[in-house]
Length: 198
Image (cartoon, rainbow, N blue to C red; front, side):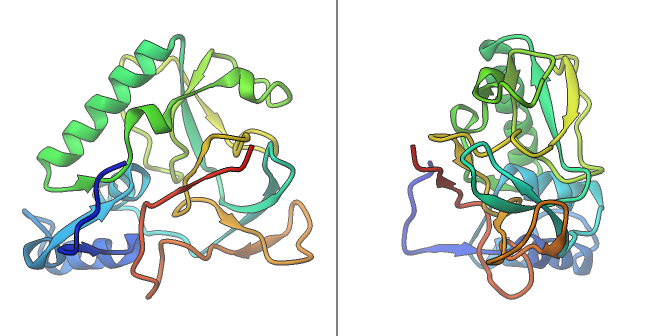
């Protein structure tokens, strides 16, 4: 986790996307020139892909038994080893940072064994971060991509990517549509995921 100082300026995914569009998509966004724009890997990849963030998703159950709202068609890269996952996510963060993003996530937080999800039937041993639809990266290290389904995220002790996955509203049922609450609109917060209790 990156150290936070009093000079950090947090910007939501949607705000960063709009700022980059106003700036013509070149160089640092206006938010980054005033302070340090901190983003999650999922938010930065989404913004640079040119995709528009979604404000609604589907209610799924995490491996911790809690219900969450997850963007439609969210995906995770899969890897054959921990080393491949760490190396690839490290490289993707480096690419984003060369493009002016400051990423709060670390590869160690974002890579986890698929054995944490025995009922999800992932086809490879390690999983990378949850990404928004349309923002997957091209890398020879990725062994495959898998859609995120109920039971396929939020294992106890894993990092909950709070700008991608939001707690579901009280009483929500699996499969229902619901608003995504974190990382969008005027909240001004992006990327500071919490650890799921375990």
